[in-house]
Amino acid sequence: MEQFQVEPVFGHHIVLGGYDVSFTNSALFMVVVFMLLALFMAGGLKRQLIPGRWQVAAESAVGFIDDMMRVNIGPEGKKFAPYIFSIFMFILFANLVGVLPIAIVPHLHTFAVTSHITVTAVLAFLSFGIVLAVGFWRHGLHFFSLFVPHGAPAWLMPVIIPVEFVSFMVRPFSLGLRLFVAMTAGHILLEVFGTFVVQGLNSGGPLGWLVSLLSFVMIIGVSALELLVCAIQAYVFALLTSLYLNDAVHLH
Image (cartoon, rainbow, N blue to C red):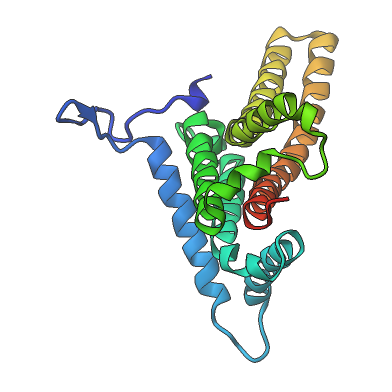
């Protein structure tokens, strides 16, 4: 599990005022993700009359999020598109960087920042805070009517309201846990099958070679699945955030 360990990049901790402010591998890979995102967007903002592949890729990503906001929220969703686009692209790039096979170089390995609940929880609670701010700013105390389903009988309200309130409050937890669990599980699977490959080769004999071969095939399959999960989890996070914003805007 050392691949998930957060440790200082320069080998020693820096403590200021009783707080550890060391530059960690987690922070390093967040900087890497930011630089890759900046490079991707810089190449996509050329606005050439005949766009190249890079520009088409960036414009497609922007159009994808814009369509998502229009479908899920309506015309008012356009104002939230920059945030949804930013969080979608950050999660997507962080997930993809986390599965890069740079571990073939000795003493190097990627760090999946989205495999840590601290990162995913911050993203989830940030999104939830924006939902609350939008809801109360637009509707004031009428925002609490979100917990009262339209048309529900009055005698069921003592049961429905607490259930709706609890389901609303668990949203940030489910949002953060879903991404964290998916990325952690995938990396653990790759580590397990990689261990099977090494142990099978070390054990020798036909059975050991067979175990190694089957495990290697599983690594290829899990790696392909991981690439799909990287995109799906970024999409799900952005989609659910847009749906929660829709509730705050329209009080469905």
